[in-house]
Image (cartoon, rainbow, N blue to C red; front, side, top):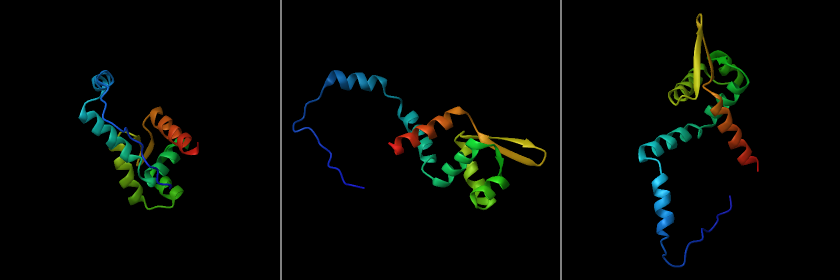
Amino acid sequence: MEKLEVEHCEMTCIHCDTVKAVQEHMPEAEELKELADFFKVFGDSTRIKILYVLFQSEMCVCDLAQTLDMTQSAISHQLRILKQMKLVANRREGKTVFYSLADGHIKTIMNQGMEHIRE
């Protein structure tokens, strides 16, 4: 990646009205931390792969492991994280547990991310 120089003001000039207007609409620090934690979940390629598989179909851990050529243990570990962040949901059918995307927001986030990197 090419290193870009960040341009900056040549003198200090605070635009108080703009600063105040923005500050009034800033979420609380805890909300911003939660948002950052949410996006951290997308920082792991294994979790991204799992989410993309679940776009196509709900699957059990065995099927996910086979599809992604990974161990069931590794898949389970990542699913636990995805479930904690409410990105996936599960349902039980007999002795089998099926996983799926928690809601349509996840697909939208992933699609927008792909659109951004493909530009």
